[in-house]
Image (cartoon, rainbow, N blue to C red; front, side, top):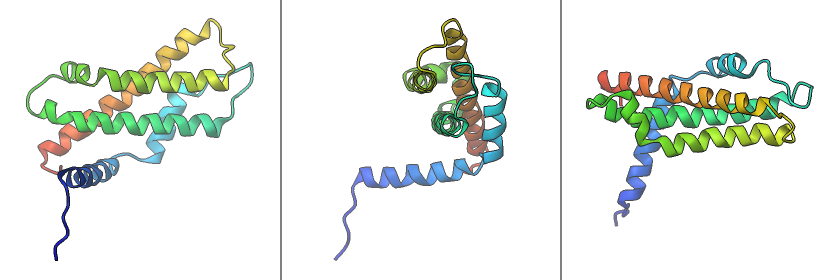
Length: 147
């Protein structure tokens, strides 16, 4: 007797395989360095925040944005510009930005005041950096036929 698999199961297996292969391009050292570059000097409530909790949340957003960029790189491979491809996933990217921003606000108890706008822009730049990085790596893997 043969095992029956559905199309959605096969698609999910293929997606997981691709995500594992593209994540080989990402290292913990890269994540730590970029976290330090973007958020190294931020203080919440006039004290340094609980670094491990915030750092893990930033890693999660970085990985998700990286994977989204890599997934969308197929459109760049077929000739669309990076800006047009970015518009395709605007909603998902905005969700990542707002999730990270709200996480910072939660840990800061909302007392950032005038710094909250600059914090939002920092979160936006962070997520967009990782999306673009994933897009470039994914496009390169497609050109080398490693996808």
